[in-house]
Image 1 (cartoon, one colour):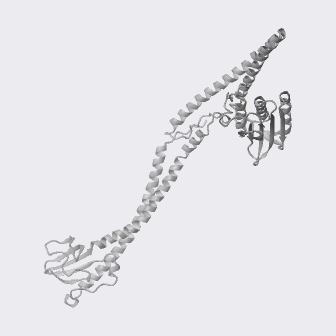
Image 2 (image 1 turned 30 degrees about the vertical axis):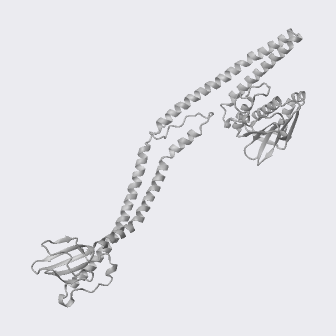
Image 3 (image 1 turned 90 degrees about the vertical axis):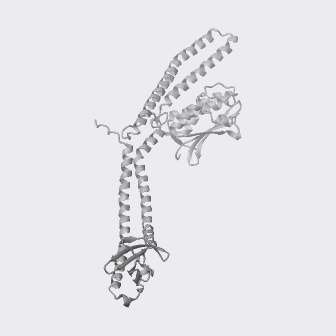
Length: 451
């Protein structure tokens, strides 16, 4: 027997997926930033080389011949590393570039290296080189604003790919988390699909370790609920079955007593007793039928084409004596050949509907059963022109043991519950509305699919 796989950890999978995606995209972002930074710094280095070349060229010329200010270099304004220099002797600028101030960047002192002076209304970054023997200083400076411009340009080049990589990271994390949580969605769908007729345990194999205790607890609840329902159904079925024999015997004893006491004054009590026994027997039969229907699944039905014309004729013939006794007119209109259903259960449905119509319609009423096509599907309707049922009571007609008050008729309140259960097993839409000529009650059965 193949062993069940060990439960996996949802936390570890999520952590591994997010970390893996983050590391991969972080490395990609680092690579993009490196390429952009390399391009920008290469341009700065190239400008610095160009500046150095011009400075060296200027330094090799005769100072007196050049004058104080060297002419502007071509393209200096477009370069990123725009550097200015001064040659200072005894505190006096002997030679400078065109963009450098006429006074020294930094005051003469004994220090060498970098300084951050203010000159010509700008902040400068200056490097000072001094030759003590010749008393010559070379001061090379660059505006701080030019450096900030380089940083701003670098940021302008970096933020689109960085934002794009963040969006890509969010998308990848969304997809990875959805994939990791897919077993949870399957489990949730399996739990949501549970019905009183389907209390099978939720599979524990393949569940994450964090969800496994919940699934096991739910399976325990489902198991106890299924056991309780099975016990209830067995009790109902056993009790109803055991009641049939004594009820039949009681009915026989009443008939025997009625023969032994033929006095006219005893006829009415015996008749009432027989009616009560018949009602109890009908209730027991309904309970037995519900006990058989409740555990059924729609896959257990014997579906086959049921010819409607013979079925309706048989039902009308069975109810004709009662209808004739009460001068109720029974009619059938059938333009539908057949429907797909369990034959025995369909007959139970139509018989219960006709029984209800006959029981609650006053004498002289009209009852009509119609089978035809409606909106691309098969429809069977049973309508009458009796007293009808108000809107609030219609919504409760399929509740077990519910009976509309004030009807003055006996009944168990299970007939329409049986109709509802059989309709649900077949996928038939059961609806209630007005009956014939805007009066009475109409019960409509809409069959699924094309007729």
